[in-house]
Length: 330
Image (tube, rainbow, N blue to C red):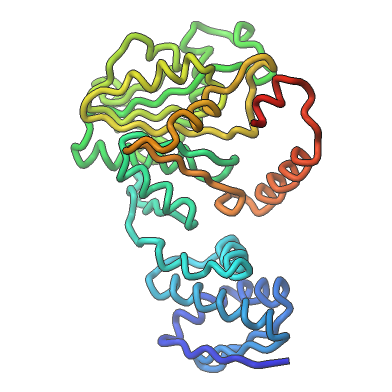
């Protein structure tokens, strides 16, 4: 049993880190089996040497985040504990405090994890960025935020959002309405992100002017997209030909972000994902970044991360069903 003391500069940051009714520090105590006490800004940690070391790292990182104005919630506490266990809390200092975009309601959009921060930096510094990761890692949301920021600054004249209309166990033909009505459900996540960033009225205004376009991937064929910020969402459901077609639409003054989750491919078993091929073909090309987000970057409910981890363990232990899946796993 050892004891360590952290001297905080301001009592307010300690109160923020501890949380309402000490909820945040209870998570640290339970996860790391330590005892944490606040005595007028002096944080006293006691327990086994290894656990105290992790707790000290985690609390130091949380105090740093609190001192720069970041909100501290239970999700962030668990994320920082994970970094402490992996001895990666120094990466927290690399997370810049830049606001990517401000929503229509005045909410600041920022990267919440180290992986998200690297993803946003890649978008800012490269012409083409591939964001690969599981559900809930903010791939689409942060890409749309970056697109709105570029549009507001005048870096681009248009925002183009697209995704393949692949039937995930459903039949497109049975949906009511015309073609646009049939494909709208597939584009709903893109609509939702744009509505939050711009507001419904502003979105509609830009849509009517042609500054914003939301359309299925098939509508991109034969076009050259200049001065545009283009986002291809759910790219794991593209074919090899569709991905090549999309990549060759890029024009002057444009930027493209391709997002996808290679663990959720809805293509027929005899089709190879165009995203998987692109990850291999484009690797190492200058001005193209490939960012791999993980379960650690999930910013949804805590159970989402646990579900993703459980499925990953299951898939890794399950042998491929057929030769096509063997090729895809490669």
